[in-house]
Image 1 (spheres, rainbow, N blue to C red):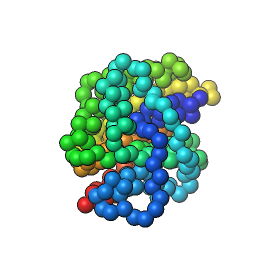
Image 2 (cartoon, helix red, strand yellow):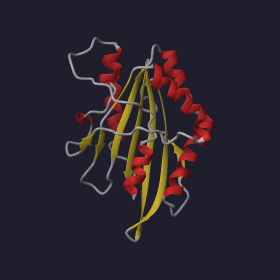
Image 3 (cartoon, one colour):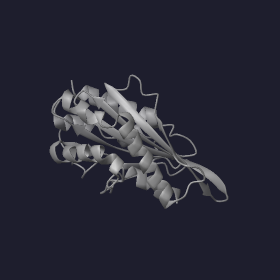
Image 4 (cartoon, rainbow, N blue to C red):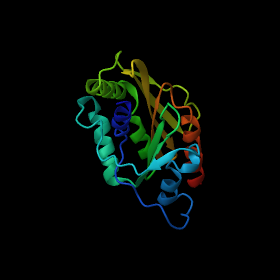
Amino acid sequence: MLSQRRRLLILAVPVAASLALAGPAAAAGSDKAILKAGVITKTDVPADWTSKPSKASSDALKGLKECKKINTTVAAAKKDEPRARSREFDDPVSQARSQAENVVYAFQNKKAAGQFVSVFKGSAATACFERLGTEIERNQPATTPPTVSPITDLQGVGDEALGYEIAATYTQNGGEATLYIDYIAVRVGRAVTIFVFASVGARITQGSDIVNAVVQRVAAAEK
């Protein structure tokens, strides 16, 4: 059941179909270079993690009135901006059953990228993720109401970074287990990458390293 909940939250990533990124190295600063640099790869996660193509074709925020502004902005970006998404990476070994995936957009300029990130800020965005937590609880009642908290350790990551963590505790095998979902948006110049991490029992320990690896590649690709 927890695996189902992780999957539902991962569907919240505002992504569309994957872009093929194979081929010769792209010129620095090009859309292609940014997109290639901006997705999570197998070198960013522990060696024993597995991966599969992400088949998310819907948006868990869709239809939630509290998320209208985010949905409208994401829909426009999907239509107009180059983008790519990573594979879905999974930890098959530990009890945490961690998952990671992301999407990257290459906007025309820094201003447009900043405007995109801005819709994930403020009380309206918080209300959106709180409603999402409520939807998750509706499908599988939690032992306590899900909580939504800002992620506060993103200072110095990229040019802008913010995130939200949803935590929900469920009954499992006679005990309790807490599912943590981290939703992180980072702007690097004119690129924006959005990460979704999931882990059971504690916040994903590999998240910071994954984010930093991707952000550093994107920064280098924009030079």
